[in-house]
Image (cartoon, rainbow over all chains, first blue to last red; front, side, top):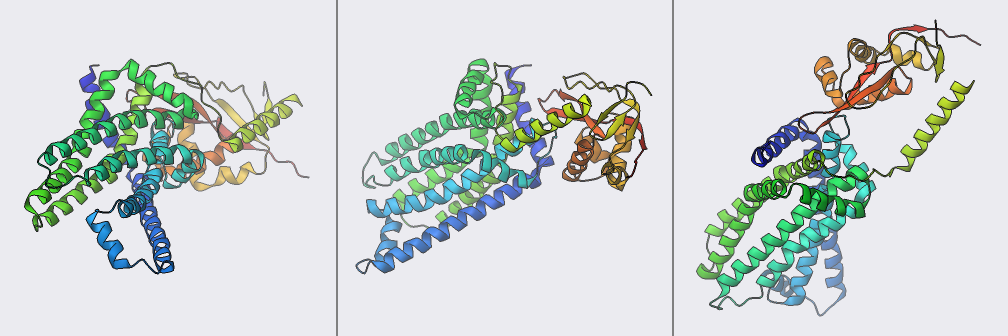
Length: 307
Length: 120
């Protein structure tokens, strides 16, 4: 089978599996969204308490500074706020790697929403860690870009450089995360999952690169492109009503990425992990309850057979 | 009856060939004697009975059972867990299809079930 047809198959089969199991994936996304708003509200409440307790601070100056992004301290506050909410949301979205495992590798060929919590309980720190890296690999270059003077004649080139760097970092991250997280779910060890990621890459580099490049152009590039065009238009044209349409379009594309692209990514990566023939690590028995249950059953059977 | 063995309160009338290796399909015994009182309500549960009837005929996955019974896969999974716990069904084999999806096949433990409960 050629690599090109493999890429096409990866997308086609993953789409079919997503359609068949959309309920579990959709519920996970809605819960992740809920967690995003909960963290935002909590952070907001803490922020209000801090502002109220410091008499020299006023809301109007803080809001103005955050909006203009002209004060590093306030920009950091905004980054932390948005960052924390995104980390929580993406962290929970990563449970979809567990759901994809249920569909593709458990043998049951389906998944349920409640299983997402089980996977989060098992692999929460791996999911949060990858969520942290993904969110900050996007946000930090963007925040750096905001401190460039709009009057600088090379601004557009600097922006292109930043966006390119951002895309490249995120692309490398996507390849590593999409190799590591299905592997963690399948065999349980975080350390071994990195080794397996590179084994997969070594075995079928073209397929992995082609699949994720295609995925990038379908789901991520449109979001980045519209945000870039909007940013540059704002620099050159100043305030304009057109931005509202662009913002709505950007938001819609981002939602398509979250609701369609993200679960598809988890299924594609699990499919790649399953279909590539490489030297795999033995799965660890992570769940102690399951281990105890199996041991108990074996003892019972031995006792009965021994009678 | 020959080669009788009791597993968790269920008496098997023939040796069961269970092979979970890929591609190997298990054969089932003709008759199974149920001595565990807790297995009786499981056997007579209408939905479980329906699932068991399909599994007596052939090896099936949860998705095959979903198409056959019209039940939700989650519900089928819970019924199968109960049936597995009482050794009324077993996982006959696992297969990886051409799309790299692992498929777990279930099968009834016997073609017919007989209940024999002694009390006290």
